[in-house]
Length: 309
Image (cartoon, rainbow, N blue to C red):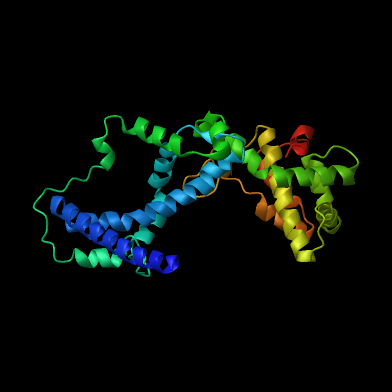
């Protein structure tokens, strides 16, 4: 009996809620314009997707290093302003959001709201293209304090740093698991503390190196998978060692992943050369690439780096 009553109550109350949304849309369209409102409604799912990506990617990337951004909203704005990111988001705006309507929805779908606004006359008000934050006296401060209040869990206790200080910490934290594994396995196989020269020397017998690596992970995998795991681990080791040596550094790319760069600001990617060395047992190209960016062969990662998770 109560279950049936609850369903009936929801059907009635959610219908009232949807009607209220239509009334609110009509009031907004009279004050501004139907086109402005439709544009705003279309933008909401785009911003939702961007915000989720920002939290999972950039904020999560910082949290992995044990810190959090001091300017959470500021970082989000920087990501949105990136040319590559803006192009991706513009593609999301090209199509109307696809939603399946239900009698239990509290809000009409985008298509239903857009159709309800179709008969509104164009607004006589001049267009105002300023962001809504223009209504706030101290928009940046208000937004940051609002975001601080939204943070939860371990994030609240982490030290807050500017993005420029987060980048080198988070970059090293990103490659640490693979670099640590490669360091420990290479040190065991060499019988001495591993360096870049030692790790590259082990690639002459990449099958043995890959087998030892997968064994240390407690896995039994196919040869192709073992080679792929070795490629990722050695790539991570070289990146960590190169940054530790001071020759390369991490750069935050708001349009994609974090990047390894040299002093000239050029992106450095060891992956293809590592993959070629493992597949062809030819390390010449890898050594040449390391030499061009000035990374010494005796560079490595500190033992503490290798032992700390």
